[in-house]
Length: 295
Image (tube, rainbow, N blue to C red):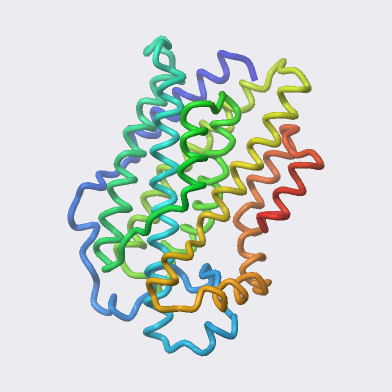
């Protein structure tokens, strides 16, 4: 795709944002519906414990409590990722021509991402859950990402999170088992994030034009390593400890849960296919994605 074709795509995305965007500051989004007290924080099938012996021993209220806290962990990682994205991309674009179509869409994307973070925070509060402290390794990786990630690496790691969350949230937004504030937030995120994913894919393709084999090889491995960190961060020992669950038993159940691995592979299918088409999936990266249960 030529530069003019890329610009045309970015202009199209801007027009789409004008036609179909939401104000996630609207308090009506977070109002519960009748029966929400008996609904999950996300579709139960996305719980890492779903189908395990521990899950089968739980009562339904206990399962609801677990999924409401698990969704808080997932959306907390989403907020962390969206803030890191903005810092990395705005720093790289600080001196760019603000009239360029790609820079203009970046401004729009950052506005969306800030509202998404606010929306996730409000939705978690609305269902009575809370966010948990992150692992220090995740914070260290975040520092590296914000300060050192370049072009296709930044977009690639962010695209990984966006693609995985997109598949999850398409299930959440259409399930009657999920509390209304989470369903509504998931719908808005799916609609608006589809533009962000198209933007990230185009930016990755543009950045890879003419790059050396060494840079492509390095970027491939760093994207895979960053994706691994994100995938593993979705499970937080502190959250299960806070629920009074034995972490050793939880970890053993999750590690043995083929359903959990299958759902993660499902979530990553589109992302892995994109990487393969763009030459960003070598032997080392495949090994990392397998360790992450994404391949």
